[in-house]
Amino acid sequence: MDERQYDQLFVSIKSIDSLTTRIDERVQSLIKKQIKFDEDVVNLHENIHKMELRLSTLENSNNKSDQRWKGVTGFAVQLIWVILAAWLLYKLGIQSPDVP
Image (cartoon, rainbow, N blue to C red; front, side):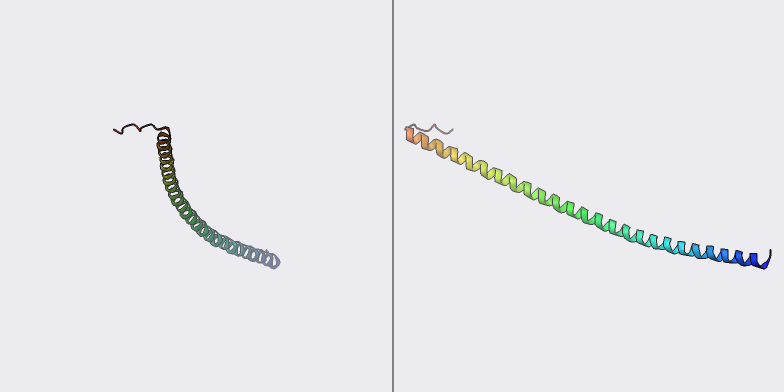
C-alpha cells in the first residue's frame, strides 16, 4: 500500500472513531434522560397513590355523613307520623291503644 492509501485509511479510522464517540455521548445523554424520566414516573405514581388514599378517605367520610343524615331524616319522619297520629286520635276523640 502506498502512502496515500494509508492516509485515507487513517482519515477513515479517525472519522469512525469520532462517529462512535458522538454516538456514545448521545447514548449516555439518553440514558441520563431515561433515568430522570423514570424518577419522575415513580414520583408521579407515588402522588397518584396518595391522591387515591385521600379520595378513599373522603368517600368513607362522605358515606358516614350520608348514613347519619339518613338516620336523622328517618327519625324525623317517624316523629312526624307519631305526632300526626296523636293529633288525629285527639281530634277524633279516640283513646290511644295501650302500649305493651
